[in-house]
Image (tube, one colour):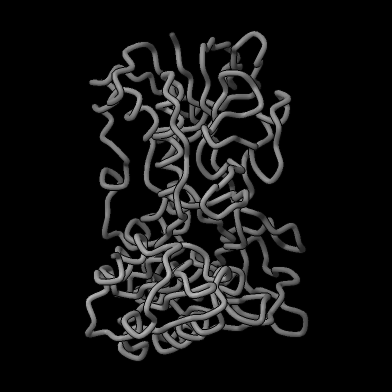
Length: 400
């Protein structure tokens, strides 16, 4: 039996490993359009951009892993078509690869600006190793960097850039940074953090165009203009669903899968950022852009590709490294009707717990890994808020 994996990111790399760990001994082929073997994306905007990590540490597993496990890696090759009836995929090299079962792990791509001057040089997006290498060529002490978008990627880049001596401006169209993903209090905390390190944040600021002669020299925002030697745009991700959609596979804000990671096509599974999946714990469908989701979906899909009956059911969690602060998040703060702060926000070590009807539904933990780990176990449980708020209390008593 041959299993073909379309895409070569986190989900693809984990799926191949899980298949072998699960005892699958037949053919595995990974087809990815980048020139690199599967690698981690989170370090790209942090340790890889800063130079703290080299390329070998970014790879999910060393190249010899795929050789030792007899996994065929076809990099720099794009799947251009899937034929679910014939059980084949066609590649950009013009050849046809047969499969018995298929896993689509095509991930996503940056949402791009299509406005005046958006094709000028030194306007960058950050999603791939190649993107970071292009940014690095413009990244130098004293350079003026304008970041379009005040989400996690933009803020992570800002923290690296200002430490590297660049002059940094962040432009956010919403009324506050991180508006779509966190509370007003957490937005204010990160606004103050970055402002205190020298990053200049401009909210309610819409980019209208770029100016420059060949290369960008300024970002235009109506009657405002921000001089720029380079620009990094971080305004979201678009799921890569086109090849699945063209094959007649159901898509709706991602490739639609069931709780087994199975698509609408027989023996075709999907995992990672490209999927729209049901979450029985939250009672709704989600499309998540997160490493934990990609890895766990890959494990579930791999088990089911081998004939198991495994269900994907997990509370989403995420993280973001900015300066010396590690933010760890579990659940969605918007689901709460009450919030409890534990610790001291001014000391950059605290956790905010979000409750609904007295039960924990989410948490944001800054430099508080113990609180984060316990909160993952508290989701859905009613708690004593006095214990939750008391930094001297042992949260383990809430686990029951």
